[in-house]
Amino acid sequence: MQYRAIGDSGISASVVALGTWVTGGGEMWNGVDDAESQRAIEVSLDHGVNFIDTAPAYGWGHSEEILGKALRGRRDKVVLATKCGMWWDDNRGSFHFSFDGKDTYISLRPDTLAIEIENSLRRLGTDCIDLYQIHWPAKEPDLTPIEDTMAFLLKLREQGKIRAIGLSNVSVEQIEEYRTYGAVASDQLRYSMLFRAPEGDVLPYCANNGLATLTYMSLEQGLLTGKVGMDRVFDPNEFRSNEAWNAWFKLANRAKVLEMLAGWKDLTGKYSCTLAQLVIAWTAAQPGVTHVLCGARTAAQAEQNAAAGALVLEAEDIARIRNDAIALGDPQ
Image (tube, rainbow, N blue to C red; front, side, top):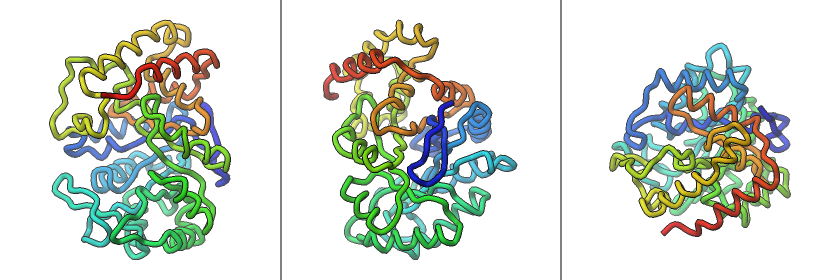
């Protein structure tokens, strides 16, 4: 496993990080096996992953609770990251979406953040979170000033409840404003070989300013593993059925992706790896990328993802994979 710094926080974390969105379960993921989720966490740790990311919104606290159970007796072995700012206890904040029977709001107000941090500490069974991240930026009509949000986060750090501050799903302009009020260690963003827009702004900015990046959806919800065939049909409530969010799952686009992946059989042979491991290693090798978040529904998936953290691709193969992805064009 390779390890890299989380910005200037003094924290070193595995290049492959375990993402626990799916661990939250619910309709979005068509259910989940809690016992298997816990095994996936334990196997990740056993295979060199020391970086785990979660959020209260993943299953309305369920992901944090499962993670807290799995980390009992092993908390000191983990760089633990969670988030704040997605609120569902009442209507404070700005409406975001309704799902699983709950109205969810974006709230970066100090009064709701004060409740969130205590809930996360309790569910995770810890007295300190290593990386505490804004899940989504504030928006109208309850547009909490960044200065106010950052002042509260800095207070949490002074109190020893968090070690470092991170952002997620923000623009370069928003990162810059946060940084005017205090140290920011990282930014979490959607990025994959099929979604390369951040290469034009966020990734180079973070690279030039020493911020770590945590990329999510880098396997495009399993599409880039090669295991999602043309005959796969998703439940209408499942996240991957939302073609507006990920048009690559449309059958015509899916066929093009599968053809591209089939063309890398020589590369998986060369590196003795799976397609998923090849894609994870490629992602980790991109300029500005420091850590790749990989979800795992099963212990077997977790073990395979972890192995990608030791895989180093040759420059010519990195370029070839990029050119093949570019040749696909945009999804139709």
